[in-house]
Image (tube, rainbow, N blue to C red; front, top):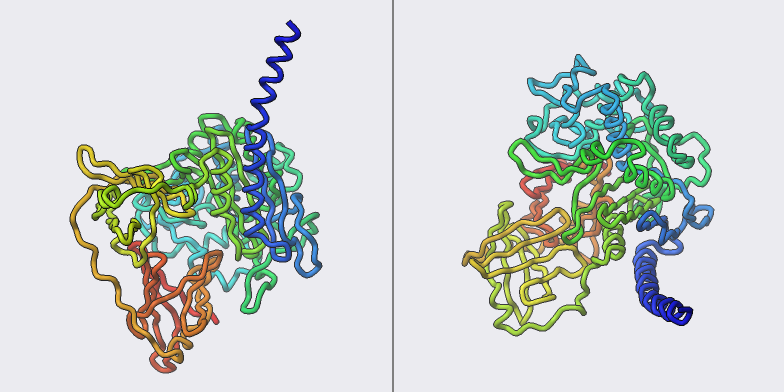
Length: 550
């Protein structure tokens, strides 16, 4: 009997050894990813990874304060930006369960004088970014009062008379104004300030003792200083009154407290299972198209696994939380510079934690020319895009019709191909007809093969450096999204906040296109001074004007 028990014990122990080894490999890979992005003597980040309710990885990188040379530590407190929206949405659902509001309530029930421009705007529309109300963070006037303390009603007054972007429910457009109105509704119903409601009903109840409504004047233990990139390196982040982000982005927290928060949501400590399902639903537009957003959470996927996520960006800080309900995996990364977004790395870490990490180019298998040629052609997808698959020198490429760049795709089987360092992939089929499924974090679409030919590529021209020099400067798409235009070695580049630098290619003296994404930039020049005053970005059927601010 004892010998049998001992044998069984040894057998179980031997089984456990490779599992522990595999887990350690995962942790090393996560550590390497973070170390590569957040350097020892640069702005930093904290990360926490939990699986099945247990913390499996928790670490800090870089500096919490560059001026004092203070290392980051996991306990540091950060502004979390738009992750605040989760708290606002849950607050609304708490009031729903108490019978104090309905998701179909029109906003005029709480704001009788609000000019809804002959439309019906509901709380549901506000929660899902489908209201059509102009987002105040896209308005140039925000800069005029970004440093001022304002009341919620004064903030609402700043955008309420703006023309609506579309009729409620017709489109999805990320919107901070909607969450400002939700914060005001919480105040109107409860008779408490938004700050007091969040503190007493959520932070205190969950013992989130290191979470706060943001303040620039209050002394907050372990606060990480916020930075941004200037022309010659780091500078302290621009001042922003925390009354401006309000219920759309004003909260501060730590990775530990946000793990507590996620656990509370999973275990229904604040809202019921039914309400949680509402928060995590992928809602649709009036025409039935999904928007990949619930109430305060995005609904996306890693490979074929549903994921709930949200990020945040605010002056001096960026954040990203990723939750995989089916695997009970949570990843939260907080940073203290709006120059080094954690979004991509957070998804990579979550993928590692659930065993769905991206294949590496070295993992690609060898296929012969006939096997590769089989999938060449144009594929017209149900979302309206057309992607061309071409074969050059025994390598398959993918290119959108409206794009300027070809991307290599690598085989992991005879019909499945992946993009390097990406969650995007193709799954081809030739029965009963030739089709391709294109899958990325936002879901999947199916395309049908055709023999359409790729249009001629855009022709780039060379402009004199003295012309390119005039476009250098900072352009403002929104108050939180600036684009730096720079000139290096006779080449012109654009770098949006928190994104990589991309080269611009001239079609004419004022018209440029990008190759990394399907987009164009057209500069507008003052006819008197002949100097640029703005540019228009055209991408995905939308146009946005960015004014030159310096």
